[in-house]
Length: 505
Ligand code: FE
Ligand code: CA
Image (cartoon, rainbow, N blue to C red):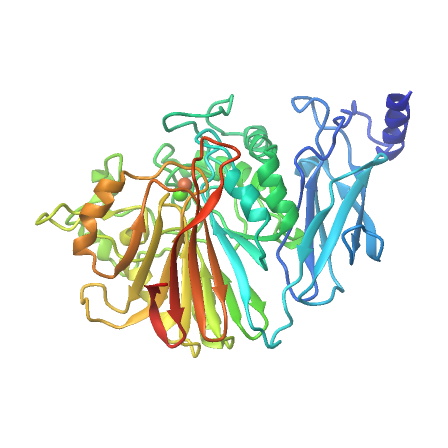
């Protein structure tokens, strides 16, 4: 009886003009959870994606979804509501740009379709530009290989007091890898739009990840595994033909947009999608989010690159024409740094930015071609732009290297006494397996600008800003093999305003 009412309700929602067979929605159409993101002082984006009963069936027609946002957790103090259309061409994803909100306060939201309500999510608007703030709290997360661990870290993050979560890349992995897997993708390498959609759906089916999304707004950027490992612009190591690779990139970018709480304005066009953006948090933080994958030059000395992608004596590495951000984003970054006026600059990006000479004691300098070390002149430009900002204090956060790092970003990495321009905090890995801890500690003595490096631990970073200091916390779960693992603070550092570089605290 109930089922029939549900089906009848659904039929009324499908547009009647569509001739092809309609795939019914799943019993729980909100099985991928809800999310919010891209907060400004007056707006947020609300997200969900409707699940079909049979995810392999041809997509049905457009579906109208109702949304409501309220000022209280029980959704009694109505603020706004409306309808959005989940379009089959966009995977029945729903992206609602809600504006007219008040700054710096929580809101609660939910969706309904065919008489079924989604879980209630909580979000938060950014403080008004210029509002005097005593503190801001951000979490930094990246790298959540689904097979290598459970998402206990996400469940703990849901309980943190945060203004926003910064997710800096590797939301999905396109292949299976690693040892001691706790669960499985159940499918091979992602190549098509359907493959990428199914991979996101699998990751997003995890209740702990859903809890984090339902608790905080996310500000996101991507790294390589949202498309293919170590891809650079229009090619990847497994697909050096731009024609075929760009078709994969278009599918991957579309699925990314479909599954992230990103505004409608950022919808990708073909294989292009602008993701870099800027956010203002009161008088305390100017946040600059960058994309170092889409526009970068190909790896240096590509012909000689072996798996592992390490390079020594590669003159091409130092070519000043080699870009990481592309000319347009580089200019955007430099002008944003010049115009910044908050107490702190915060740069959210993909990977370790500090130079890391990976040579064994006494050996020739060895660098990783895929990271910033493969693009040292582009890094220099970025550091010069940070140094030219009227805002004296900058914190750079990153991910990708599956370990935690605190470093000093030097004006000149070849001179240990050179000025420190900014403080870097790489906020670990949710579950993706990191490098051997012993190998990492061996290379630290000849990289003196590195304050802290730790592998073999998993979790996320917390960054708290006040007018006088920034606090960096390494939050780690006891075991990624235990979905109920407790969390603890493994290390804590403080950056005093006016003195870049972090000290243990
Ligand atoms: Fe990763
Ligand atoms: Ca990566």
